[in-house]
Amino acid sequence: MSNWSSTSALKHFQMGETIFSEGDPGDSAYIIESGSVEVAVSVDGQPFPLRILTSGDVLGEMAVMDTAPRSASAKALEETVCVAISSRQISERVQDADPVVQLLVNTLLHRIRSTPQIASSTKSNIATGLQAESPSEDNDKVLDKMRLESELQAALTNNQLRPHYQPLVNIQTRQILGFEALIRWFSPTRGHVSPGEFTSIAEETSLIIPIGQQTIQQSCRDLVQFQTLCPDRPLFISINVAPRQLAEDDFLTNLQTVIDQNRLKPAQIKLEVTERVFMEDPVALETLQRCRQAGFHIALDDFGTGFSSLNYLTRFEVDGFKIDRAFVQEIITNQRTQVLLESMLTMAHGLGMQTVVEGIETQEQLDVLQRSGCDIGQGYLFGKALPFAEVQQLLLQEAAHNPIRV
Ligand code: C2E
Ligand code: CA
Ligand code: CA
Image (cartoon, rainbow, N blue to C red; front, top):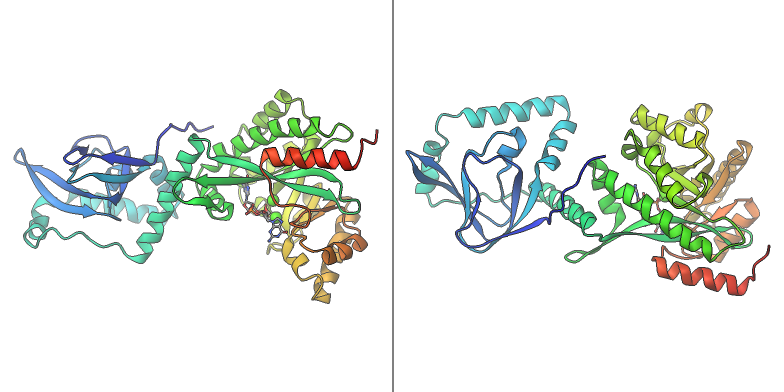
């Protein structure tokens, strides 16, 4: 498991403060949020200003990309705030890039570095007034992504990521059977950031590994508390797991340690994976198989929305399907959707699998699904994802309405 240093993404520099010096190791690059920075090289022992960078510009990226010492110094010209981008963030992206792109990046870096006098070639810039380059729209998008990633790492360290829990109910009786853990991030600067936005960034990098591990630990601890309010039946927790997490050697060992510490049974943990897991890293699929052998339940998420064939189901057994909410949305208005949904339910039951239908919002949709023989429902009709304390309230209310049946 990777180690994550406790760093804040934002760095403040006073006027005149050195951000880095020539010869320093390149441990981070910076995006300037506000203020301005002068980049200079030393020529015959004298500092020679190269350029002035302002808000939106990036600096220090070269030394980070090729892990060579800094070839220039940078100092703040006024009070300046930067987002630090760690060498891990950048090198991971270069390593993950297509080999041709890697080669081009490395060649380009080598060429820039070996240009005899970076300083002399930029003297003309100085003569024309040290213009800062304005980043293109594409650059803006990339920079915003890097910024978000840095903030996400800081959010992880500062405990700003919390699972909320959405009820999964028996579709006939509406009794709560378990919860799906859905991660929530409240950022002091951005407000609520949607998991759709940040889980994809976390999955592109290895940040999903510590985030996922924290979600597993927290949701298992919380499940123990929920269970005390619901002594008549075992509750389960459904946890979304990305292929990248499953590709880690110690995924299963860590999972087992967490459930042993909390005295939970493997069957109380459902791992939700999308069919991407069948197409990406074979190591991830092997881990999933071992998890299933160890008694953890595997549910295929967003079922019906992918593009792969169903062939993988002949080779790999799962315990359940989660039928995507796209089908439920049209179940009333589109007869064909209803037929497709019913066929999926028949197939799942034929294979001995449990079915969950996601995104149920209306009583009308529920009525159709109850007649179709689906097992478990999830959706705003039963409740949105709630924080820990509100789930406790919900379970207390449920117990008050339905006294314990032993
Ligand atoms: P998902 O796993 O398909 O989660 C279901 C999403 O549908 C959730 O969005 C949930 O709030 C939303 N939803 C549930 N019922 C309804 C409904 O009745 N109507 C509508 N319109 N939406 C409904 P959310 O929480 O924004 O999560 C989005 C995605 O983020 C998840 O999709 C999942 O792919 C990812 N995600 C969330 N938490 C985690 C996590 O801990 N790990 C990983 N790897 N991914 C996560
Ligand atoms: Ca899910
Ligand atoms: Ca889903």
